[in-house]
Length: 265
Image 1 (cartoon, rainbow, N blue to C red):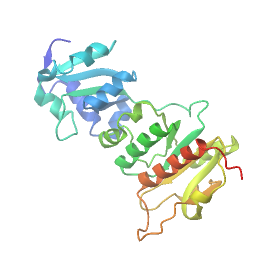
Image 2 (image 1 turned 90 degrees about the vertical axis):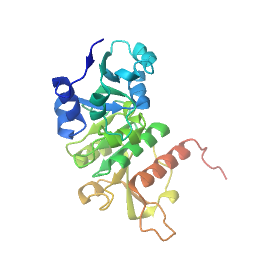
Image 3 (image 1 turned 30 degrees about the horizontal axis):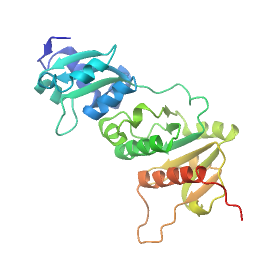
C-alpha cells in the first residue's frame, strides 16, 4: 500500500494496538505482533507474517524485506503511529502481524517435548522456546496458567524460535501427560527430592521434560504423572535455579546424551 496511516484513531491501528495489551485480545483476533527487524525478518522467512507494518521514514531500510515478503500486505505508518504499536523502548520501525498458531493437537511424530506448568515469567517462556529450538526439541506444551508465548516479552526472549517450535496449549496438562504416558513417553519432572539428573539411566526416544512454576515448582496433580523425578544438583549456596536455566540445562544434557555413543567398558 502506498498511503500512509497517520491517525491513532484509525480502526486498524486500534485493533493492532490492542494485541500488545491483552492475551485475551490476541486470542480473540487470532493475531500477535512481532516487532523489530530480527523478529519481523524471522516471521517473513518462516512464512508466518500476514502483514508488515513499516514506519514511513524506514521505507528504504526495509525495502528488501518488503519485496521478499511475497503475498504479505505492507502498510506504511507515520512514526508516531508505529511507536504506539511497539513494546520496546527503542522501536526499530517495523512490525510483523502474525497468526496466533496454536495447533489443535501435538504434531504427529513429535518425540522430544517440554511442558510448562504455571511458568509465569514471559522471559522464561521465551528463553525455553529458544533453547528447544536450538536443541531440536519438537513441541512445547503449556497449561492455562503459563505466560503467553506470543506476548511481547516472551517473543523477544524467543528470538524467533516461536516461529519454528509448535506450542500446544493444554486445557488439562495432567490429562495430556496421561495420554503421552500411554503412548510410551517418559515423563521427566524436575523435583528437588528426586534422584540426580546426571545419574539417570539412558532415556528413551520419546520423552517430555516438565518445568514448574518459578516459586511453587510443579503442581501435585502434574507431579503425580511423572514417570521419572530428577533433580539438578546444587552443591553451592543457592536454594534453586531459575526455571529457564534449569529447563535449558536438562534439555541440553538430553541432547548431549543423544549425541554421545553409549559407554562400552
